[in-house]
Length: 91
Image (cartoon, rainbow, N blue to C red):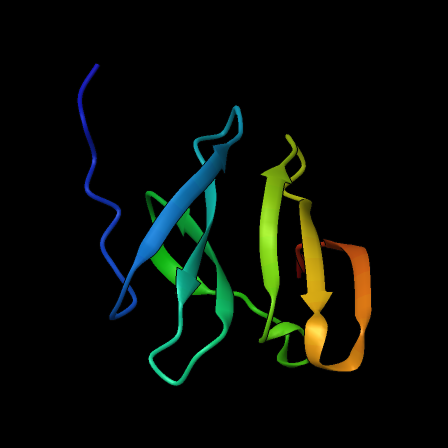
């Protein structure tokens, strides 16, 4: 077992969960403010998968074996807190 550097999207980032396929989900802080959600895979590296509507207070909670990502979204500026699931698109 070893350590893998996941890289960065230009600022602070934090891995939060990994599934049985080795996909890692986490959060990162955007330079302009707000949180983003990243997905890391061995093949694709770290990429921003944040939906445009979840850029302020969204933070991932976990990823399941199918790649679905649970996200807690706290949009404090408009008084909305919700839970959402990001479902991977498969061609």
